[in-house]
Amino acid sequence: MMEAKNSLQGQKVGAPDKALAASLTDATVRFGTFTAIDGLNLDIEEGAFYTILGPSGCGKSTMLRLVSDLIPAAAGDVSIFGKTTEQARLAREFAFVFQDATLLPWRSALKNVELPLEIGAKRGVDVPLGSRSPRELLELVGLKGREDALPHELSGGMRQRVAIARALVCQPKLLLMDEPFGALDEMTRDHLNLQLLDIWRETGTTILFVTHSIAEAVFLGQKVIMMRAHPGRLREVVDIDLPEPRTIKQRDQQEFTAYCGYLRDLLETC
Amino acid sequence: MAVAENITMPDLEAAERAEARRRKVVSTAVPLGTAAALILLWQLGVKLFGVPTYVAPAPSDVAVAFVEKFDILLMNFWPTLMESVAGFAVGNIVAILIAVAFVHSRHVTMAFFPIAVFINTIPILAIAPILVLIFGPGITAKVVIAALICFFPTLVNMVRGLQAISPQALELSRILSASKSEVFWKMRLPASLPFLFSALKISATTSVIGAIVGEWVGADLGLGALIIDATFNFNSPLLYATVFMSSGLSVLMFALVTLAEKLIVRW
Ligand SMILES: Nc1ncnc2c1ncn2[C@@H]1O[C@H](COP(=O)(O)OP(=O)(O)O)[C@@H](O)[C@H]1O
Ligand SMILES: [Mg+2]
Image (cartoon, rainbow over all chains, first blue to last red):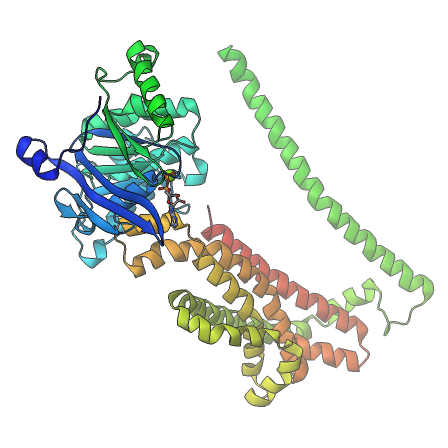
């Protein structure tokens, strides 16, 4: 299950067919004198579903914010599809889904999904149009008929689905999700997990998904990135070899629980 | 089961609606009844104890004055309305623009916020004569006083409103590489509207106060001037009628702002 990070060169020479969605090399993030992430080396393969686990405060959110160009690296290097994070941001190569849906309350569901298309349109920015229209995306996340609803008229799960549709509207190649279902009840969460897997299969986008639930990490992820705290570092990348497509039933199977058990033990050492 | 539901559901809903309607009627009837009772008490008190009309007129005297002098009241109503509306518009527009500048630049805030606070500490009654001296007895002084009284609450609320956008929404705007003006028009400004309207509801009534205070200091037309005139002539019924007219103006302004809020702020 162990998989040490291959050196950047080694990976590229050894497996030229596996393109990298993101690559972090000795990436370090500091807040003042506090080191939140210390020399993180990590390659994210294109098209894969990664889940990120780790004790709270170990820098999971910080890592996503580093990748999404919200905070700069104090040292080291981060590249996304071979570009700098800023270039990738300007090209809308990635999208972000927060724990809180962060919808604009005065905009209807549809208008919220359309927001990324409006930003930059008047400045002549070449906003990438996805293959699906905002309306189709709302249908994809199961909100057909609720296009005109205002966010306060929707449930928490529905709001998060609008946020996912909004994230998909520019057809990002990399989807960053920071505990997107953390505030939802278990039923809604299961439902959205399955929906997200469908979307992932259909769009072929790479997903980095932070969660604090081991079961969710195993259920969704092809690979689980385990981080350790003080300072934030990579602990291990665990491959999850479960049959695809994943089903809720798998969770009761021994293989699944074995992965969970392994990760639980690993988490205790972080 | 399904049939039973179909039968009982509309019944339940109808019952609920009826209950809601009943509650609404009660909640308007009770204060109206109380007001009517108080007015009746006032009428009886004045008549029973023989209070002279110039000290306290009976409601019936006020009502007679209201009807008989309605043309005078209306003639004095329009200037006050104009001054209030103009002052409301000027004071709030200036406050909104300055709030935008404040949010845009820390330096502007540093330079002007203390001055704004200082202006707010000057009692409007104290500054009104000065403004009448500066701007003369015309409409300008009243508009300026009404504007001044509107200015500060809107400034403070608007600054808060423009900053009310969540840190996460700002991160979203950054990930979308939004420009400063896009953040302003698409996020900050709409987010500020509920704050703006709570300030506008305050200034809807205070602008009327400003206009009337301005008219007290120097005017020969307007509800404020009529109040002074009626007082000096011991014409209490007319005085009371004018006061009701003034409060009617405030209510009208407030209702219009509330209506606008209902139409615009729908979230
Ligand atoms: N803006 C910030 N300023 C200072 N410290 C921060 C900031 N953001 C995060 N941290 C610190 O960095 C560490 C990692 O935070 P975070 O990435 O949010 O952890 P988590 O893994 O729980 O998402 C924490 O100790 C947190 O206190
Ligand atoms: Mg976090």
